[in-house]
Length: 290
Picture 1 (tube, rainbow, N blue to C red):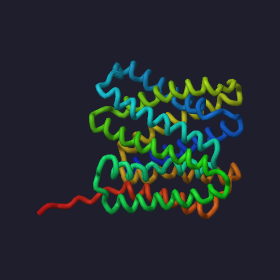
Picture 2 (cartoon, rainbow, N blue to C red):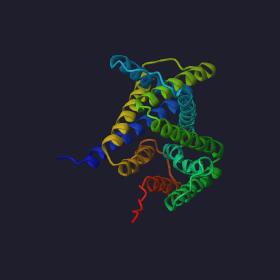
Picture 3 (cartoon, helix red, strand yellow):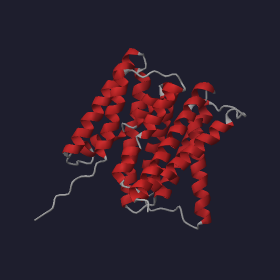
Picture 4 (cartoon, rainbow, N blue to C red):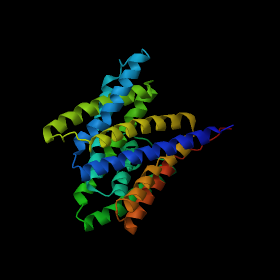
């Protein structure tokens, strides 16, 4: 019989691979076809929104919610995070841009301390310091390569991701199902990115761009489903740790197929951010009262 943790691990590896494929497609569409981040975010969000909406009708569920404004806050933060992440993919090396998006663990810790007034544990401090060290290591090469502005813009996406994840947690605690949370985010992201793409300009749909558009939407949707299922059937710590394979897969592709170079400082920074994420996902030890 297959263990629960093995099932979760397998689904998370699939999700990480699919997220990496989405990032690669966005990177190539941006650099080779010169598509902007707004239209790419639109196609990324449209397919999940349509898929969930159709499934909702078939299963006779409802999209009505008593937590509409909570969804709007989460969705706007998530939309900003998505746009900034796609901006980074178009302007920075794959491994760097993907890792900067994963710095959300650092900002979650900071928001928990200063906004939610949580008392940080030793584990939180270790993850926070490791994450901050990783960010500093990655910023140093950015100074030297005149990519500091692009790096800081992409890094700010981690802040919006952190806020969005905290909102997801609040909505989940209030009983909102994951599919409804994903739908509102996808719908808002589709509308916002569609308006922005109309303002900044759309690219013509061609036989060359169509596979990218379909691939980005499909990979994003399937990755989201695989990740959700991984957390449902697997152990949270193992699944959370394996989610960082997205960074590894992206880095391997960038070096082997895109000819990108990663310096030692960036490698150390990426490693520190990954370790910070793994440490943060370690479950707290419960003290037994006697």
